[in-house]
Image 1: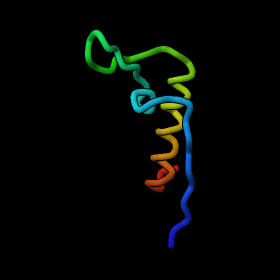
Image 2: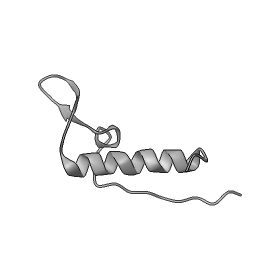
Image 3: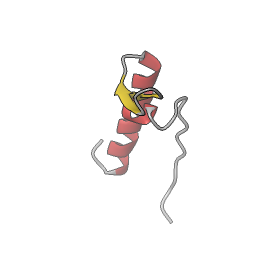
Image 4: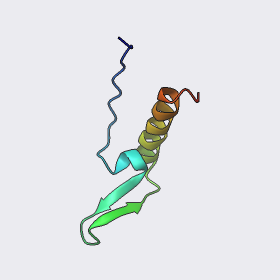
Length: 54
């Protein structure tokens, strides 16, 4: 069995791709909110690690 690691981020689904959901536009939009960008970077790092790229 392979080791497993849980990564919980202080964001929603939109945040993991560095966006925020805009209810009026009914879609995700780019953001400059540092907390959201930090969560997105952590997501990217976890994916790279899982793929053996880091």
